[in-house]
Image (cartoon, rainbow, N blue to C red; front, side, top):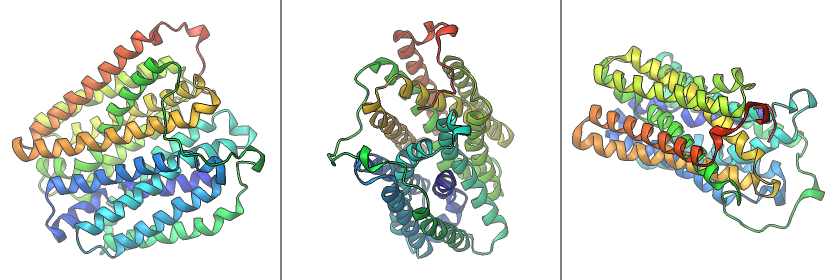
Length: 394
């Protein structure tokens, strides 16, 4: 039930991507405005992670999950009544708040209620559910733009109905946090761990590089594809974005037994290859290369983010673990928003091709700096025999 809710909430965050072309025509939106609409979602995520960082340890997990579901209900209602870009900003902000609650609280709750048979891999399943939802969202949105007469209405009505069912079912699940384990509320913003800070910084920089790449795909794929193919459909944009997020989820499921170091090395290499292919796709104007780049970048991002969270969890004390993971997500979603907005400004002055190439170089440089940070921390000197397997739970 919790993992299904995570998938539903996260799917909603990416579902509007193929619909932005419709909104652009209805409201006369520029590329910059579309990226702003996308990016404000990340601000909602960050706000939720900051505000609700400690609250679930006081109230229990279910009340926070209910807040997330109600934010999703409100987001759908605003989308259904959208009459200008202001409505889109409000709807995306509410979407981000819902996602931020589920990203932190639901991930922890899913691990806590996991049955013994899957407990060993519960952290991987919870993380992958986040990315799986992000992958399904643009595909559903693309199918809607292709086959529905009013996708900007019917899709949000359908999602609203699904969330309403989850609101009814949520009180039926067991509260994961026992009353004896609850603590008096004291707001604390997410903080880095007190130890292994160099490793944490390196993992975060690599994560930001990967998440920014997926953010760029989610925000600007319709514009890139329409520049390659003037008659590209919303479905094609949704499928390409789905390749990126779907590749990330696939990597987390399929390669969950890789050790942390091997998973990180593989993820960084595949993600970097994806960025190089993306440069070629933008330079040559090739949709095939662009889709291939999305898949490679997603696979690499999935490998690196899953191993990063496992490494942080394994080497962070229990009292600091949730805070450290939440801060990691704050950094990732800041990275998903800021470069995409900057890219839109570059596109306005120098064109979409130059902006895309500049972004790829930025992402590659950021990942390289993260790798150097991990080298300084001694990450790559870990002996295989002494290394933790990736299947250890958080």
